[in-house]
Amino acid sequence: MIKNLNVALYVTGSIAAYKSLVMTRLLVKAGANVRVLMTDGALEFIQPLSFQALSKHSVITNHSAGMDADQITHIEVAQWTDLAVVMPADANTIAKLANGIADDVISTTLLATDSQKLVVPAMNDHMLANPATQRNLATIKQDGIAIIAPTIGFLAEGYAAPGRMVEPELVMERIQTLVKLKQTPPTHSLRGRRVLVTAGATRQPIDPVRFITNASSGKMGVSVAKAAADLGAEVTLICADVRVSIPAGIKVVNVVTSSELQAAVLQLMKTNDVLIMTAAVADFQSVRVQPQKIKKAAQSDTFTLHFREADDILKAVAKIKRSDQYTVGFAAETNDLRENALKKLRSKGLDLLVANDVSNPQIGFSSDDNQVTFLRTDHAPIQTKVLPKPAIAEQLVDLVAQDLNQK
Ligand code: CTP
Image (cartoon, rainbow, N blue to C red; front, side, top):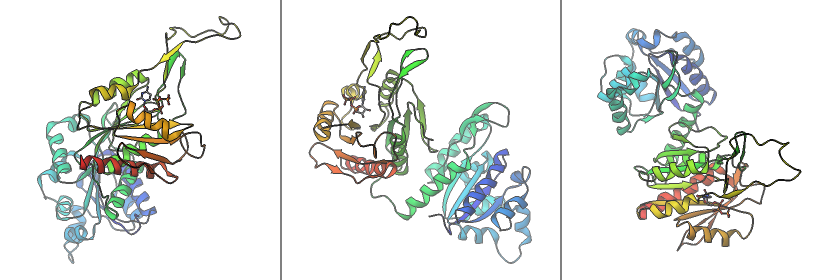
């Protein structure tokens, strides 16, 4: 997919510039042609020779551009580029991009290129929070430039705060998605829609060290969140216990118990258009969570713990759901799949139910593959093939987008 892709990598003034060396390596390894451009700020942090050795191309700087008498460098590179990646993107470069400023070879080339652009910011938390930077980021987003928001992490300043650039592996994932979407544009879009996805297993405490949970890994929910983001949705992912990494660009809210999950879902339903409830909610909760660890000695051979049913989150959502909102549930069944699933579709007031046979170890919970049936009122069921979870997720969000666009 990335083979022979012409990538212009713009490295700007940030300590995170060293990570762009890894980025260059990853891109070259995947078969891309990489040409690196460095601002004067970037040169303060790192030597062009390192990029030159990895990319096998000489690096373009303000100094080198002036020495090349044969060609107008910025126009030649701008036209050659399939994808422009600004990484790390400092506040100054983002400001220039937002305002069309072209006062050196780097900003001039960026302005001159019609290619797709991806900006990966890295900066001090105060600079990032500054209204001017936020305004500039909003402007470039509106101009169709993809951004991978920085995360909260350890900054060069010596404390943890928002502003830390995401890792090159995550940038690579995003590049692959951008290229794939360009090569095979999806038929339906979720642009302008806000999608809430829940993922993973909730935990219900028994005492301070024990809890009940289930075997969900969160893979399906994370795949759904990514697929929705790929179709252009603004995605919030509520994560219970999730054992897979979350792609960049997705807002994450962490919860532990089903009541925390319920509170987060009900709150976020106020501002979202779609809810996709992939989380495996622990159905039972202790009648009384023991404040101290339950001691073995205090028990006889057998003993009883008292549980009660946890609230059904989707049923609570059904009570507050607006007619323009769309909700999706998953049904994990071991027997009478369609019959049980149809009951859930109605009792939970859903627009779509994804029925899942968890008795088959090849598919479901922790496996990489899945086979599901999409059930909607007034539509024939659609059964998928056995496919990797990301492919199932793509089919699901495509169906959601199709339904929403017809609503
Ligand atoms: N769900 C929920 N609240 C719960 C339990 C489940 O909102 N307390 C959601 C799940 O996220 C899923 C759907 O309801 O989208 C169906 O979950 P499932 O476990 O299959 O069904 P249950 O309603 O729990 O019924 P049962 O376990 O008896 O099959």
